[in-house]
Length: 236
Ligand code: SF4
Image 1 (cartoon, protein in one colour):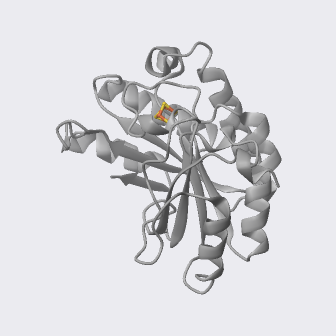
Image 2: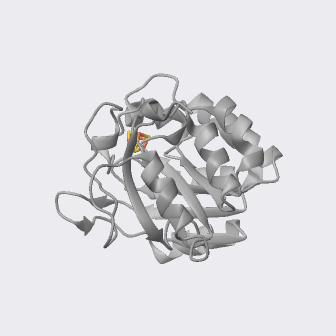
């Protein structure tokens, strides 16, 4: 495996938040072609930056290396349900398929978080995945102004289409602030997702990194509408 090409920007050994209902280790992949205004991991946008998140465990400190992560997983086989690849954008990693295969070989399940810009790569990995968290950032016509990249909505549409046709469990999620999506546009977006067949949807409150605060809350009326549209709706 070309491990030297793997751009790992962080590792969290235990998380109950990144894969609903599962205790998972989380691998952060460096690299993302988009430049969203609200990105919480701008240090992971470039594949060349030095890792700033290190292995967080009492016994493991230091640089991030895929072999060390595999060793860590070997020692946690009975404690963890699976491994989540996130980022950045995990599908920027050319070795991702091999990395997923190695994790599966150790007996763990695998999930990914993706912004949906690589539908073909996701499709090739689908049979290896147990869960996908897909960002739906905003309405299609507003995507480019949020991501600062042209044509950014179309690959997300294709990614969602592939997920809907697959048997893989997935959640769509939107990080929301009225700064880029009004409450009524958010309802329109959710109604469109529901009509397409999305069954699990989460809205993540935008938290300002600068102020460490939640900026806006959805109204009770909007939350009732959103809850009625999906089998599983989460506001977090
Ligand atoms: S797609 Fe995700 S990682 Fe990439 S810039 Fe946007 S928020 Fe950041």
